[in-house]
Image (cartoon, rainbow over all chains, first blue to last red; front, side, top):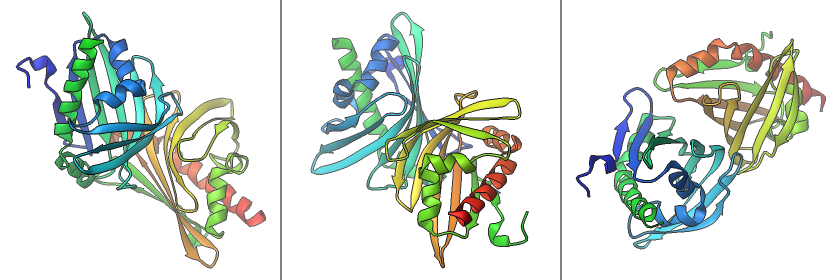
Length: 161
Length: 161
């Protein structure tokens, strides 16, 4: 962990709607942070908790495209997939997201990329589901660890590239 | 309108989450009702209010596909589009939906097809958005008229085919 508050991940549980909002800043220009979300070769290196590997089956990150990948590690494996509703370069990705073992648990995710100037970027990611129970189960599943560790690996990739 | 309650459209505004649920029964087998949602040549004949025409640009109704169509009539035209997260034959369609003039107003829609036996089908359609204001604006836009008139045209298509 870091004492630099700019690198802390804020996870905000909305009080009114079944939505989680995740806010994180990166020391990299918006184009690089965006590319790390759209290029499967980069995306697979940082998404998810430490100690897990991602294998991409499909990752067609454009408006109207779709994705599917397998995450495995520690004797576990799971498939994740969704469709890309809209991909606006260096601005926003709107997509669906599903862990296939819970086929009806689909979220509508929105990832906003904000150019803060000076080569810095703020990422605001929201996940909307259709019930508070589903949202709270998602948080209780340990997503915070995966999000934090994933973004720390993304920090390192952005710094090295 | 009809006095047959089976053909009445129920529009239910969820009290807890920003979601609208629409329930409607049809005098047709589930396969036919499903096909009327996935075949663009049928879909374009019934969706939307009376007096409007639909022109399909893309309608790839399969898991990972997408759609875009134009609705026009009465001096107005608008484009609608989204991506198909999942299409399970004769069971469920999970998709995104957007009216392009409001690009950030994206809903996550789920259309369930339930075989009631005796050649009857119940359709339950939910639309989830990220705010109660957005949901209430959608209802205030006159969607109820469009939904009712569209389903009445679908009744006629199902009866004739």
